[in-house]
Amino acid sequence: GIQVEQSPPDLILQEGANSTLRCNFSDSVNNLQWFHQNPWGQLINLFYIPSGTKQNGRLSATTVATERYSLLYISSSQTTDSGVYFCAPPSGSYQLTFGKGTKLSVIP
Amino acid sequence: KAGVTQTPRYLIKTRGQQVTLSCSPISGHRSVSWYQQTPGQGLQFLFEYFSETQRNKGNFPGRFSGRQFSNSRSEMNVSTLELGDSALYLCASSSTGPTNTEAFFGQGTRLTVV
Image (tube, rainbow over all chains, first blue to last red; front, top):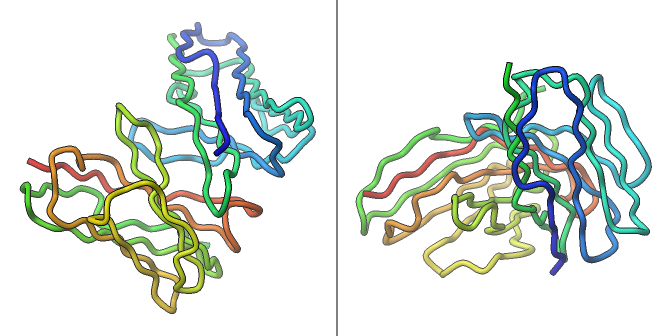
């Protein structure tokens, strides 16, 4: 199945700073999702992004399917952005494959 | 539109017991997937159902089983619980399957086996 690598594994930011999270995957994909896992464990949908760039407020994502990577940009980070960020492309039949995630800590 | 609902939110069970978890998908969604999340293994795929048929199953022992009903609600069952089954169990719903439509997750069921 597809292999997913996320970097960095851990990131500590001062409030207001910007960051870029990276997701590399081993096979071509026809879509990819980014999630934020909140402290209570729920996976919150951030982006469904097969290719190109999407923006939602302070967050944006870019997927370059031909080069097998996706980037998540967080600008002007806030403490509420803390948590774990996962990318998840589909793998094989009817499943998502998750990376190990990037744990983001935003300190005031 | 209501989101994905998982019940119960928390469970404590004893080794050897069995447990049933429930997932109600978003209205109109026919695909339900289950994932197990542990600190050591991360998020791992359990199985996926569409219109009451299991289309894919992850690499888990036969103690893990599931089913889907005609209203698309799904249950998963774990028999003969082991300490290692302690985990967060997440359910995802999508309209036709996570391969080509967006998946949405419930809040999860946190299972503790003692």
